[in-house]
Image (cartoon, rainbow, N blue to C red; front, side, top):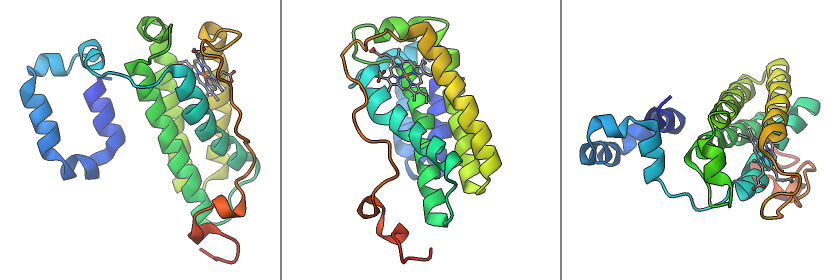
Length: 192
Ligand code: HEC
């Protein structure tokens, strides 16, 4: 899938409609063929963080919400909303993994033909998880969670060094958020 279409798909029609100027001027500035070319589009976007950071601060945190919810299914709509948000965030990280990162090996990984299928797979599985959360469908969420872990592991087996290149490992707790960390509409006593 080309990057612009992938991004437009992830951003969704509401945002695209809200910002036609941005999209149309971006397209007008470039010949269409170049704009639709995967590699060229990715090369023009300058990453600001490394894959190591992306993994620890985005991918791992977002995925954990999906796995926790599969084990302890949400009961209230506001809890399902959290899972849906996090799954959507995870889908976006799959796209970012196609763009590149600032880590020492990131561009080399990005350019490997074996890299993209794992990144794209993560996007698709995360979108499945987001749909499952919207539908409050525990079985579908579990299925997505199982597929997700296999994909993380497969990519790690192939690419991840034993010690992360920047020595950054997950240090935040994966535990269910404290009551005060939940948005007000999702705290105990609120029946939403
Ligand atoms: C496209 C390949 C790919 C996918 C998919 C992927 N990872 Fe990673 N991950 C890597 C690479 C490569 C590194 C090492 C980065 C470095 O050392 O610079 C890494 C590093 C990490 C790290 C930091 C190192 C550590 O051991 O703490 C965590 C955490 C992590 N990944 C979690 C996940 C989780 C959870 C998933 C699935 C939801 C996932 N990753 C999916 C490629 C991938």
